[in-house]
Amino acid sequence: MLLVPITIFSAFFAGASLTVASIGAISLAGMAVLSGKYLTSGADYVKTACVLGQSMLVTALFQGHAWQSDTHVLYFALLAIVSTMGRIPVLVWACGLTMAHQIILTVVAPSFLFAPAGLADDLLRTGFHCGVVFIEASILAVTIAQRETAQMKIESKSKELETETRFAADSRQEAEDAHKQASVVIAAFRQTLTQLAGRDLTCRIQNEFPEEYDVLREDFNIAVDTLREAFSRADVVADELALDAQQLAKAMTTMSKQTDTQAKSLTEMTETANTLKSALGDTAQQASHAAQSAGEVRSSAMQGGEVTQNAIEAMRGIEASSREISQIVDLIDDVSFQTNLLALNAGVEAARAGESGKGFAVVASEVRQLAQSTSEAASGIKRLISDSSDQVSAGAELVNAAGQHLEEIEAQIARMDDLTTSISKKNHQQAEALNSLHDMVKSADGETQKTVEMGNKLGAMSRRMTMASKKLSADMAAFTLTQEDLNDGAETA
Image (cartoon, rainbow, N blue to C red; front, top):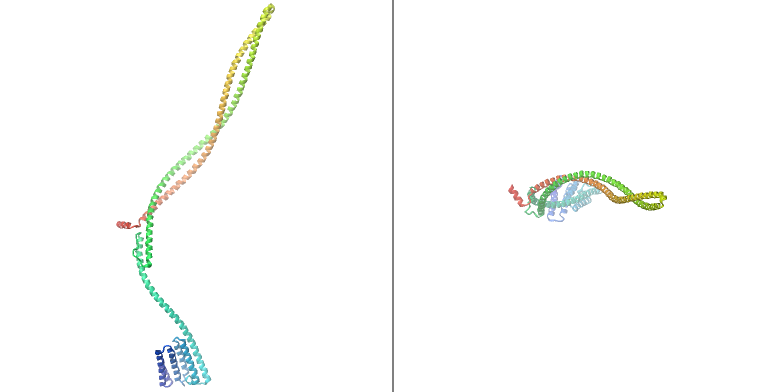
């Protein structure tokens, strides 16, 4: 329709027949319009042929005109217009139709194309035009293919965008619904968390949430119930801990006092052990001296026993000698008696002899007196010897008794020596045991001092535990665990 006035103007400009131009241009435009209405599959081919027919008509109208060759530019422009249909087969149809028109008119009526210059030149010119048409058509075909690919991509992207837009709309609607639901859930959680921040553990979310959020409500209620139970048990534990801490503090105070008393007692025991150690050392030393003295006494007693035994032996010898002397005295007494009898007989015999026997009688008288004196002396000696024997016997008995006593004394001294030695050994052992005891007491004293320090530290720790347990109890008391606690807090407020 737009080419009709161009064709008529071209006829007017070229000085051609306006009637022919008008009838041809209108006829071609009418055919194109009718094909668009009544044809379905071939309408684009008919339209393309009509459009190119307008170009061919314009070139024919410029027959013999100087601008006739310039009108061929219109073919290239129309090919570009045909390519806007986006169909490569139609573009190939237009390209083939143009080249067929060029070749046929070059052979049959070249004047309808350009000023004839001979068949060879016309064919070369037509070949050049056909080559340019082919190149343009190829470029346009590639462009159409690219445009179709891009169009397909655009359509695909459009579909995707449409789908995404629909999804976005659905998502936006869902987001709005979710936002509304989330707002309700957040409001409920905010109110409940505010109660929880106020240490109210009776808070629960009673109203049900949407299905996707209701699990949060259930989990929150379970968490609050668990927390309330834990705090209830913790409250009991805190009270028990406070009571235990107080008892521990009292026990540690008592233990500290007892340990301090024990430490003082151990100190006194250490001092007493030192004194006892010194006394026992002196006793052990004195026992050693006593044992040494007892040994010396035992040696002296043993020597005295030997002397007494020797004296007993000597007394026994004296007694034996006394018996021998007594026998000799008895013999002298018998001799004296015999001498006296002989002197008496001699006197009798001298008396019988008369005067001649007077001197012999005197001698006999002297002998008799001597015999009597000897007999008296022998009797005295015998008596003395008897008394001496009695005394020696008594002395021997005394010496024997003294020997027995000395043996008993020696035995007692030996026992005393053994006892003293045993006591000395026991004293040394006791001294060593006392030294060990003294070291143990000193060690126990040091450990007791450490125990006192530890007891003081534990006492301080127990006091801190007591304070911490009281603070914990106070903190726990600030939580509302039951509805009763909540009512009591409301009444107090």
